[in-house]
Structure formats: C-alpha cells, structure tokens
Image (cartoon, rainbow, N blue to C red; front, top):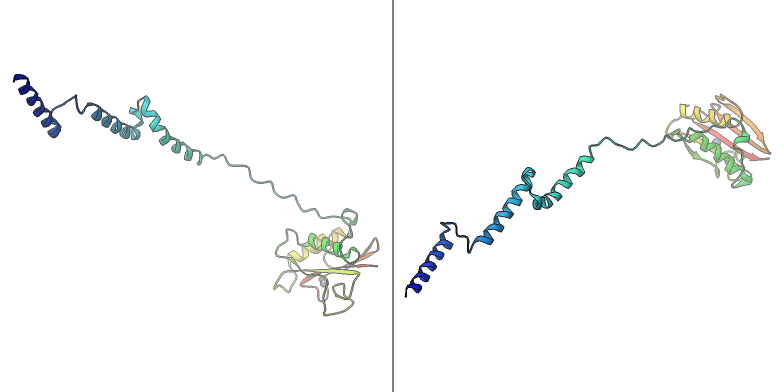
Length: 216
Ligand SMILES: [Zn+2]
C-alpha cells in the first residue's frame, strides 16, 4: 500500500512538471533541453564570433568564408593594361612591301595593300569602291572591261571635301611609293612592270583618294 501511494504521488508530480515546467526536472527533459540549448547557442554565436567554442567554429566557418571573398574584390591589384598596338608601319620604299598577288596579274593585291595602308587606324576613311565599275570611262582601272588592272577609292561617307584622314592616307601611300611628304596631285610610279597611279586633290579627286594599278 505505501509503495503504490508513493508511485502515484510521483506520477502526479511528473505530470505536473511536464505540463507546467515549473521546476527543473533533470530526468525527462534533460537530453532534449540540452540539445535545444546548444542549437540555440550555435545560432546566437554565429552572429557573435567572439563567444565561439571549438564545435561552433565549424558552423561559423562557412559564414566567414563569403565574407573574405568579397574582401578580395576591392583589392587594387588589377592586371596591367593591354600592350598598345604596334605603331603602323608606313613603308618608305616599294622594296619594303611590293608584292603582286590576287586577280588581274596581281594588280588586285597591290591596290588592296595600298588601300589598306591608307585606311588602317584612319577611321572613318574606308575603301568604298574598287574594280568592277560598269559606268564611266572604260579606260579607268576601275572599269569592268579592264582585266589587267585594279583600282580602289578611299573616302569618308557623306564628305565631299578634303579631310585630314584622306590627306593622311595620301601621305602614307606616297611614302610607300618612295615619295615622302606627298600632299596630292597625280603620282605615277612604274615598279617591276606595274604602273601605279595615285590621284588626290586634283580634278574629281577632292573627296576620295584614287589608287590604280595596271600590269604593263
Ligand atoms: Zn578611283
């Protein structure tokens, strides 16, 4: 009888304890309560690293890693700027570049090489027309009937008067033909059996530089 009465009494006490939580019971709630406290601490500690223990440091690590990654972004170590392009080589003699190739006995390549020299790094000057013209004088190096010639015109779209870019192109092309400081006119050179003609700042050639090549 006394034992039963004690057991019942204990049962009542435990029920009251579990329901109300009024006093610190260590038997039933011990393990669960401890885990709850630990997880709560971990969550709190992650925000306050100064209180970290050995175990919590592992949890906090992934939090600090992204913090160090952006720290490298404001670092002022930037790669050196790309090397500037090599300066444009402007030949001063035909022997430095003359190389017939392409269509019409190689006149295409000669005219294109000189045209490229004129427009390189010289925007907005561009090669606006070459061989194949079906209008105008049939004797022109541009004309479609000329199968041993090639010609290219360098101009700036919409501009009908001399420009610094066209002057620069004429200077380069004149130099390549061995004439330094050429400022315009009707320049004719015969090189290795090819007649090369450059027209600039003469009649009908104030808005474009003409480069014509013919195999003689
Ligand atoms: Zn032309």
